[in-house]
Length: 353
Image 1 (cartoon, rainbow, N blue to C red):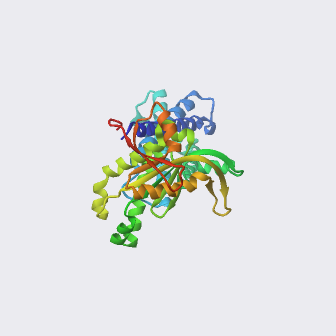
Image 2: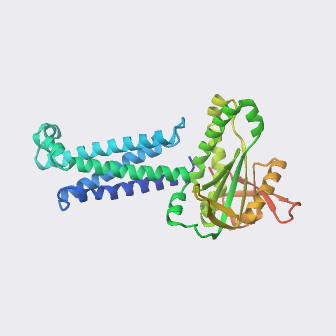
Image 3: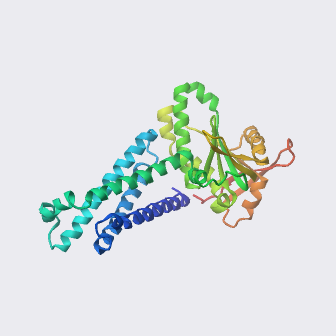
């Protein structure tokens, strides 16, 4: 795992923990006595330990399992898992607090009538309902956001691109090599399974480098970054090499299941685009600009020259100027077709990983 991927995991963990603590601190609002200090302490502890549990499930159980499950199965599994986890923590932490106040052991409190009174007569059912509703709202929103792509749901809600906006963006296309041959060898159904797994695994590196998936076209995936995000920590360029490294590490899985390990090539470019929403029943964000027309020309040259990755001079220039760039631009090619694009081969400097 690269340093950037570790950072991204820590960032996700921090967001989850903060959100859980905030929801936990809201617990006294549904308690019988919101001014009770013990209710506040319970809420803080429930939120903290609940956040730790969610971090474990999100980063180590539900994150990129080897088998791909349906959206509904994952949604229901998460809701049940997190609801039961929080209810367990609520019962345990409140019981610990009250047994301490009564100078009783935890086992003794569980046998005491006060515990049964808490479950049957007090606000336990309200707390459990609050937990269930909070988990449903948070998990459903998160899953739909992931389904649409990072930030897309929020952008649609606030209408960010309802009116077209001009932005400077970086684009990366990743093309599967020898896709026709792979499709012929595997057949339609097996090839679909192969592509599904392939795109699924690419998502790991895209998410780790804060990329936004723009679209899938056959065996090609196009990723986008706002210029500032893509240049920061070389996210756009790093994404390709992280994906390459990930696939190499999982070659045995592909060979075992499909008889072939995927290899791909990448093309990077940047430029000003007009970003806008189109459609009604199926809305999506689209980009218009010269960079969208240059990409196919670069892709063709990348394939003809049998390069792993090529990027335009439009992107290479600002990358070379950055002090934190850890890549060596080693070959210069001139595109005679357009006369405007200078292409560079890039590779990570030794010791980057």
